[in-house]
Length: 127
Image (cartoon, rainbow, N blue to C red; front, side):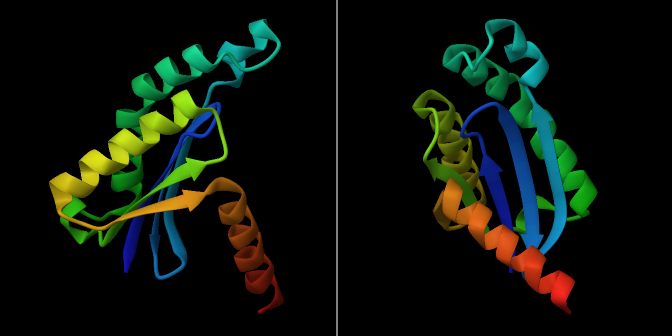
């Protein structure tokens, strides 16, 4: 099973491609340098940067994973929590990919995904 997962909850545009709990690629573009001068996150700027970065991140994630779009079984995206204007960018891209590829769409809770990821890492280290 191959999942393409999109994360745009705040100031990083990220796409990971996973196959059976194994990370094939995880590409992230951070906005930290562009947001620093505001001493915090400007939601409207973050959304614009997500729009600017999403195609590049998607292309790089697909290239690094060495899969083709038709290999994808599910498209996932961060639904909450986060900045709503940023979350909407990821949701729209995920919905578009889901429709185009005719694959099921999965919404994820950002915090639960971190917990799950940390548990997988811990399990890997123990083995």
